[in-house]
Length: 267
Length: 353
Image (cartoon, rainbow over all chains, first blue to last red; front, top):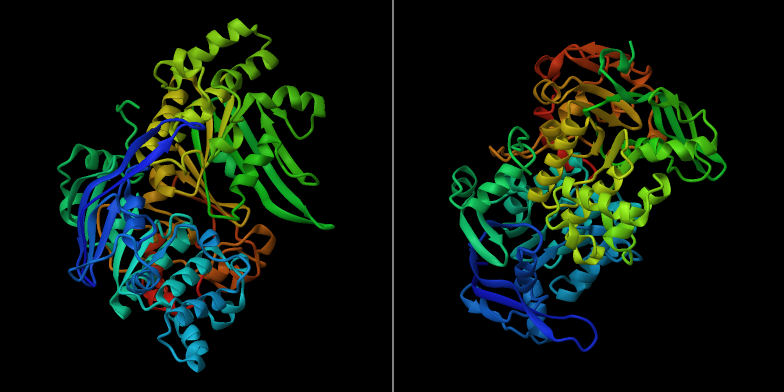
């Protein structure tokens, strides 16, 4: 799938207090970007940059105030009905930062995966169990772990289950919101390798939201830097991270722990 | 040789000697921290680095007297030479405020209905006996010290009106209000944006230089620890497994766990095709196997690692708790057919973690 986001904006109306006057907050203004088929694009930025709001609009969790989202050249409906919603969920699936919050705590993870397969109705009933095992295997989880509830899994296992659940829809693109930042350092590398494998194996495109430039360098082809709702810089990972032209991007790079220097500089 | 022998700071503010902590689980005591030795001197920042279950936060809570009920602690926690663990409850309550503490999520530790002034002046009035007016003047100075603009205006604000980074500065100001000898920072920048994190880290660095503050900086991020700390202690399954200067631990790690952690990190400067991973998941001290707790995940394991606890070995500029600590990463991976680079293919097929 070729994703194009054109002049996307989102204004939230913030109401202060009971009966207070609503003040508009431009969370995202005029953002354009594209993810080519099988491509991997990252949106980086800090709290309040609007990066998560862009991702949520792309998957249809938030309604844009203006602008368009196109899949293979076709504009996706702004206010989708049920079948359009299902169609979009088939095209792209989102994986959230904290799998313990995004997965149903009462449901064994395998049951959750089967639910998504059934929902999209592309697999015969008798073959659903086999498909669940296949997906668990694809994300490196032993089949028996599918019977566990999220709390019975480690953070990394749980994120693998969330990725398997996303893949169950056979999406053409994964939208990942800080997919490893809640995990232990040694587990992060395992999930990053898994994402690289899945891209190769299933040919899924990736739109990733992150604040971690090192991770972006590792898994993305292109990067879009957002600051206060706007795109301040965009290009290939090499262009942007090796020779950032915007002061804000330079500031982000200088603040990354690997580069952080304490000598001289003020606070 | 103990961990503390080679650490010879001038004015030792905080010292831990063979500190072990166990938590009560049902009718049993389960270890979470095992025989920790460390020292933090005036003006020093010492890093305590580990993953979940490593015991780093339990070490902080042992020092801060913030363990859950029923916990058992042995060894010595020395503050200015006085053992916190041997003193009466009453004496400890008097002494404890000289250990300040800041946490990952300031919002969880600050009353949202208290204004910044209420938060900052409480300690000054209770512990220092200042009047309301004196305490307010002092609070404004403190806000200025931690780099908050317009402190006269900010002091009237509620936590909900401030950003996370600003609130963490308020927490630091609160910790400084009683002029602590030691500051414990437990993942204090983890929830913040990188540029805000850089600001807080620079603030801690300034406070240690200008005020001689002793900081125990607890983090999961080795790169961050390397940027700010004089010395880094790496913890695994309740024990310190390596103590080195930040630079040395980064350039020439001697414990296979440290090597694995460093190798598994994506780099901002260069791209690698695959990240070398550490198999499996981090474990707690209470789940540790006999011998070296890291041996089931270690690519360089020897027969003795499975049965005997490894010795603390003196290495270049520090110590490492490993039978092979003297070898270094290059020799280890050359000698082993399953070095961290070679076993990459196993990573995915392995039961996911």
